[in-house]
Image (cartoon, rainbow, N blue to C red; front, side):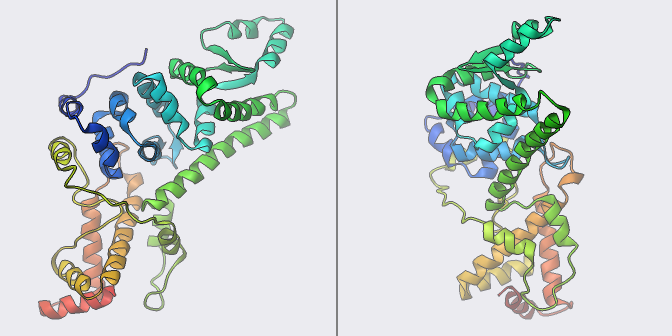
Length: 380
């Protein structure tokens, strides 16, 4: 049985209040990504089975991309957190487990399952066991962490989330046979190829590393579409020399805006009660998402308001560029934070505002009207 830590009182009260809401299923599905992830972080992945059951496929992928990778250590995959996710989904029911996991990207599933289970052709393992005079392999095949699914034998070296994995593969035999066949075949083929010679084992290890490279690459593409930037790209951008001419573009920011997708329309009025509940319990990013910077302070605020009246298109572009700079500062500081600490978005915004105002004005003591106009012109 998975261990469930005791909920902190605040998280328990929030979860109780949310589960009493009759429209919770619709509310959860309409949550913007930053709020959704902050909610699960506050309650805890291991205690969020009811909320995970209500999530959309896109929300679950967002959660996987954000919480199952260690940004402190070159984006290493956290297999124990993945096991916790499987157990939490299993707590919500085998049908929920089946549907939600099947909706995750296949490259990610191949990599993640390879960390939890070892897959072989069942006949192959039985032949190997018969030829093993020590009897060790035969005992392993009779152990608790061994099951057969169709022609495949599945073992769990660690036992992590084993009950959830058995339940998942059992229901997939009927509900997702093609997906299950593709995943188990890839994992099985990698193991079979590793047996005869040492150089074949090296090839298998390289192939397993490719699973993670593919999963990491897909994750970066998804996150980039939502306005994220990697720490390495952020640091590289900050080290660039100043542009030689106005509005000169660079490869990093050009790629960022090329992959950025338009934000989804939201209806905050409909979710007013839910957001009121969340504000009382959950520490959210102060006033912005990672995608949008909707206001400035002081001179920048006035310049943005004037720009919005004069040219809505230029105003929208300026907001996206300011959001990019904010994301750069947040990403560049990620490895300096503790793993559980939220990004200091407010401090990043203050830094961007100060830099933009100083760079545009380049002098002090200007009358406010002149300073605002000069700043507005620099944003066009």
